[in-house]
Image 1 (cartoon, rainbow, N blue to C red):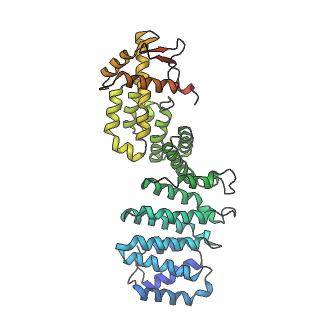
Image 2 (image 1 turned 135 degrees about the vertical axis):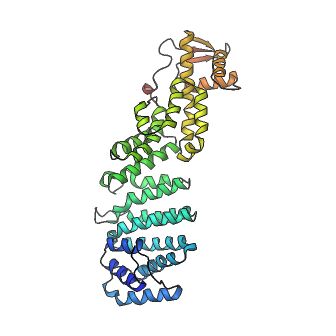
Image 3 (image 1 turned 90 degrees about the vertical axis):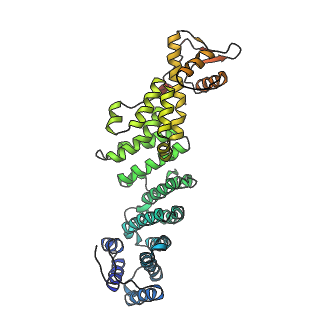
Length: 390
């Protein structure tokens, strides 16, 4: 890391903005340890004096650039208030980005967004970042064609907003943000015009939002897209996508191979899937409980919990197959569930489970309440879930 004097750093930084030199600006803003930064009014005066000397060469608004430099430098000297000054610096940088040739600063803006996110984590202020990122997103909504346009930053900005929203567990702005690009009347460039990494990240977060909304078909499409587009050597990203894609597909009766689970080290999901296929309620509950905190943090716990119904279905299927009859007493299923480790389950609970399975078309048949009996269809009483239409 270089250690320039304050005045040398300031001169070089202004030249970087004059020449739209991203490499120089990134080095100066993020990789320099500046010596003897003035404080307060002395800092403001030093910046103003230096800017006035070269103001004729500046395309950017001098007051905005001055505000950015002042807040950036202050964030370096007032570490306890670093987040507030970094946030203000970022907002001024966005204003520079909005200017006619401001798109040339896109990589500087990206690096500053990362810096702001890091400061937000340190100071527990991530919630305040969302508004600044919305400002970034708004600045990218222009119809000038790529690459000489602020729209070049659109999906990066959206992905940062999504990342922040999931980090603070607040998804209330998600729908409006998705509408920006998923609107059929949008004149903005389509997703495939952007780098693959941004496409994968966007679909990953969009898929997670669809899980939150319990829109599993849309979630599957997003995760499938993201997985297929992942770089073949990107083990971490593929594993991350599979952690969501596998449970979504399991809900439709589609299970991965054991080789895939081993390859991507998804042993916790492997146990869940094994319990589902076997109809092993006790193993399912035990695995879910053992990994509860992790699954909640990943946002898949509720979806995995709802898969318990699939375990019930497979257990009942085995039971009916063993009994070899289309008429099975509710009490028989109650006994089987007790043996399977389900404690304190009443006949009413059993009936409710069966009603849900019938409503979902995972079982063909009906319940005779007067006889307390399930009457299964004589033809394919347990249809393949993959062939059941919504």
